[in-house]
Length: 468
Ligand SMILES: Cc1cc2nc3c(=O)[nH]c(=O)nc-3n(C[C@H](O)[C@H](O)[C@H](O)COP(=O)(O)OP(=O)(O)OC[C@H]3O[C@@H](n4cnc5c(N)ncnc54)[C@H](O)[C@@H]3O)c2cc1C
Picture 1 (cartoon, rainbow, N blue to C red):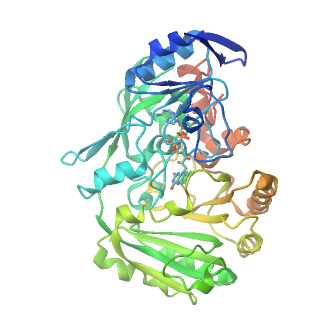
Picture 2 (picture 1 turned 90 degrees about the vertical axis):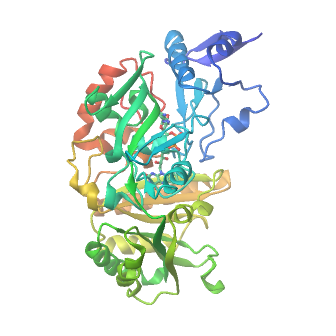
Picture 3 (picture 1 turned 180 degrees about the horizontal axis):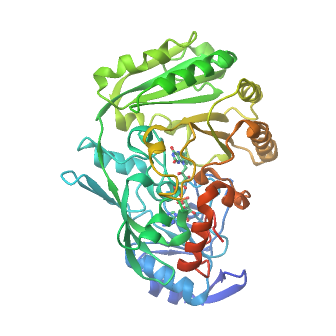
């Protein structure tokens, strides 16, 4: 059997016998000359065009242990892929050994004890469908195809954050393979420092092979939907929206999305493709109270269409999937925001009037509630005071549009900086902005750096938003 070339931690080329790689894993090894290589290296964001020297379709926790030991023994560059959604494409490395954990996607629910053990390859959809059978939920994000692993390791927020906290606030324990190739269980009493670090510190501290989450009651029906306004009404709608969310209970979360209207079935055809401001809301209390809870949002301005009502939570969790399919080119820039000044709204409206492609959008992810009641040093997630995570999401198809789209996002992001809080969500950091990691973690960065030094002194786990 032939050899293969892999990149080392210091960028040199190392030749290994393929037999050594095959012998190390129960799962399949895919090399650059294998027929399935391009499929195996495709990520959600097609801007990330990385070519690992070998991709292992991991079959068990033991494969993860063997992967870390192999990488450690030879000093190989190593990357870890779960859902493959990371905007910076950190799930793969160029030239190194890539561990693909997608097959480890089990979700075991203990409805009596109200906890779930989840494999790192599970998507949010896998988690929702297994937990909603019992009328329970793990608080996660808003798109069913996102990986639970990367989302959790960065923090995780969505429709249930205001009532139940961030995803990391609901993490009870992890099984994790650390840089020494050992499997550890970390929780509040066992390896508490390591447990603190993984609740927001990304993949810097090891490879998680199982997450244990607390479960909460929810649904299966929620009261959810969208109200659509013309973008031109932003100056009057946004202040009223802010007043309505400030008065809302933790059961109600309402995001704002500014973009060209997709052909939503309830939206009159003349609005398809026009610039709109969409209030997207989800009330997770008793659905019978839903109509009263969303009424303040229905009273805002003069909408052009609306569709709000009871529906299964699992359906609402997939409502935005058609706009977030894999394979497009994407670039994000993000800010934490407390409140939208009149000038900030004007800047955003003007930018959305000149979108560089039809699929771009700006969203205000509404957070707060239970998230704010946790000590800012209890996990690495530093800014629990933000009311909105604002994401400038540029999305397009042709590589020739790369420069224009990236420039549009950067320009809008820079113009908004004086109106933002200075912190931002680590999971929304794009490729090239890794230098902002200290700013993202703010006061928690020094502790993360100390723990990184202790748990991974060689920085084996560096294919991530790296704490070097
Ligand atoms: C369409 C879309 C919607 C999103 N919506 C939300 C949202 O509503 N809320 C929210 O909070 N975030 C959201 N995100 C951001 C999301 O949290 C991040 O993209 C996250 O990195 C996705 O995790 P993943 O497992 O899919 O990613 P991957 O790309 O597989 O991994 C992300 C990072 O984590 C590391 N990693 C992955 N698995 C492991 C593991 N088992 N052990 C150690 N390290 C690991 C990887 O090496 C990589 O650095 C969204 C992203 C997308 C693309």
